[in-house]
Length: 343
Image 1 (cartoon, rainbow, N blue to C red):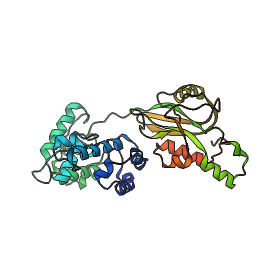
Image 2 (image 1 turned 90 degrees about the vertical axis):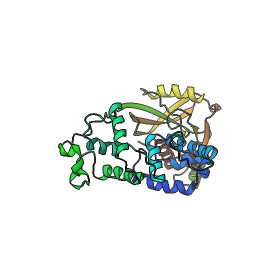
Image 3 (image 1 turned 45 degrees about the horizontal axis):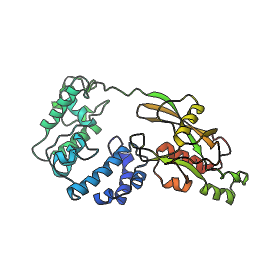
Image 4 (image 1 turned 135 degrees about the vertical axis):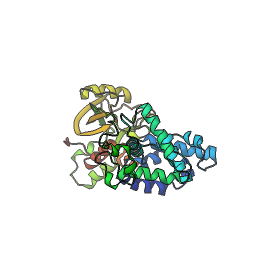
């Protein structure tokens, strides 16, 4: 959970996760949809799926006990060299080096490494430094201390060298280069794009539009209304989560283009209606303007193909969804009759 996510964000997720899956056996036998629901809001859902797959392998191949051989740990889904080294050094005291964002910065300054630490040659050198720095005993404590040093003292900007316990041996500090090292890491260049979501309500559920706002009939309709969603396929964005019809493969210029593309995916003709809202968010290298539209079927008797299905708002509340998908559900819950644009 801590990979690519801050500690403060992780803590409540971790507590709930451990309550539901206290053992590796519990995790291995968990339903994937339940697992993803516990991960919802953390992002990078591939981590959860890898964790699930790793638990299954641990149960099947290692008798439910976490392996302690480096190669066996490295073979588990979602675990690379850094994670394997961190697990084995901290939990088992093994003399395994680690190199992540914080220690990469600490060791770069320690040896006054010029250039991008992510470059292949420089990265290989830093791994060698990380290995040679390890003490004979208690490598786990050393690794944790090095990470904390980078997080709290040897920070990216304005490092607190006057508080650093090893400043006198730091070559970058000795040369007055602590502000210049490590070299600049290439930053992601974000690309703007427009994507569309079409909210399709099950035909035959709009007869209660005249219900008085706040009436019991309106509240009952809100609970029973159903909307078109599907589980997202393997290999794509947010695989395994549920979502409304949405364009994700390219930036589109109009709702008409989106309707043509999504009609082909759903297997029925979708007719866009009012725009409900715009949600702005970022995914990997894209800054996305997500245009959310109400839509209808061109023929009320049409039936979307599999795996599309209509589900109620109550069911959607229990299904794992992306952050933007959950925002759309909230909009639908607040104004379930879809009578007016909400933006």
